[in-house]
Each structure stands twice: as C-alpha cells, then as structure tokens.
Length: 225
Image 1 (tube, one colour):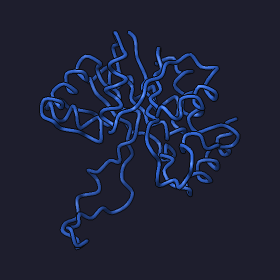
Image 2 (cartoon, one colour; image 1 turned 60 degrees about the vertical axis):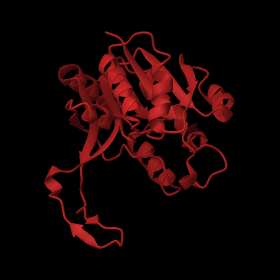
Image 3 (tube, one colour; image 1 turned 90 degrees about the horizontal axis):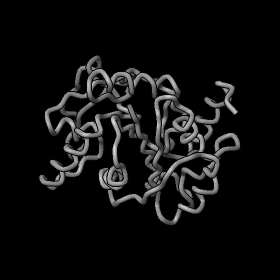
C-alpha cells in the first residue's frame, strides 16, 4: 500500500492582503507551509509528499522545507488543474491524499481517520458538523430557504481517494469541460459516494489576517513547537 499526499500551495491568497504567499507567513516561528508539510511527512500513513506551488515561490518553499524528502510541481489556473499537474507526476499509488497547504493545524488522527475511511469506502473527506444556521439566498440577498442544519457538514481537507478512480474522475471532468472547486465533487460527478469523517473545528484554513492569531493560539494551547 502506497499513499501519496498532495499539498496544495499555489493559490494567490489575495484575502490575506500580504505581498508574499500566505503560506510563507509565520505561525509561532514556523511558516504555514512548513507546519502543514511536517504533519504529512511524519505520518506513517503517507509514503510520498508532493508540494504544489507557484513558480515564484519555489525557491522560498525549498528553503523552508529543505529538511523534508518531497517533490514539487507548479500549480495550474484552478484547484483542479493544480491537482491534475501533481497527479501527472505520480507513477503509481493506492491512495491520493489531497490537503490544503493553508491548513497547518491538521492532526495525525485526522489524517489517519481519513485514510482508514478511504481504504474502507473508496473516498473520504474530513469535515465538521455546521454550527450556524445556514440560509440560502437569491441574487438580491433575500433568504429563499433554510436547510436542515443536522444534515450539513463543512468539508475540510484532507480528502482521500483511490488513485486509480481519481484519475478516471479527472478524465471525465476534462471530457465534460467541467472544473470543480472541491475534489469530492469529482467523485460525486461520477456517481461515486464520498464519506465524511468527523474532524476538528481547529483545522482552520489560513485565509484572512485574523486567522493568524487564532492559529497561533491553537498551537500554543496544544503545546506544539
């Protein structure tokens, strides 16, 4: 059994309002990307790590990640293209573990649970029950309906899939000229079920400036270095 983790770090991160990649910002002395990569590089469920980045960030990424055994590829214009670029570099794998580079607070247990669920069911994604009441609105921001909160899950990453089937799902999307912002949707598009694995609310995505002190608070609370 060989599992490959793809760490996505090629986004522009405009909402962070930073001149450099948000993944190069520091959290308690380590960059976001290093904190993310170290979780997967040290996981017994991961055999290979591929980091997807922008060409302009490659040198900086290599500097901060020099102690890890991994490979790089450049991202595409969309998330789906970025993952596809990484998939093209993989000769063989059993499971594909796709994770946002901007989620550095993922835990070993969440990685393990997602991998085990995917081994059992073919496809799995970490997620948490929605706490807030969700409203569906129209183009004028008028509330149209209120879905039952008990059936809603906020999907995070990692998302884990059969490598062979994921390649088929990518090919189908290409034939349909479809581009999905979520990897689970590729499987849904094929009619293949994806199972949610309960994760942690602390697995936040570093997106806006206020996420930095929140993430640092979680790191200190956990006692991580």
